[in-house]
Image (cartoon, rainbow, N blue to C red; front, side, top):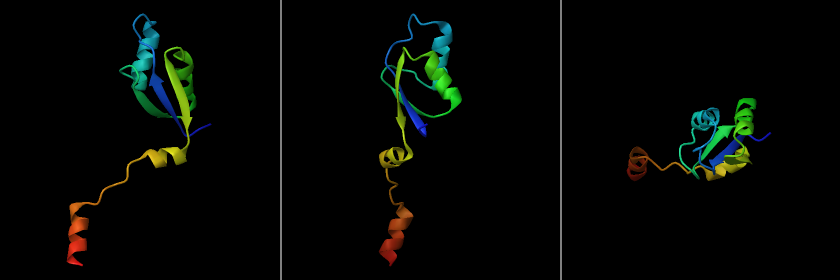
Length: 85
């Protein structure tokens, strides 16, 4: 199993079974073609199985998540310390 799952809503919930609509909302998907990252566990896999016709998903490993995360910028206090030295 991967560490995280990237889930994208690719089909509208209009006309879907109300239970499926609620599942999509509970996962945090609000608009078409928007993606979320959720932990890879049994609960998430069960939700995916229920609405697999509305979404696409891919597995993400820890290394990929670390590369995609933006680097932290230096704070003003750190810059001020560099100037003082």
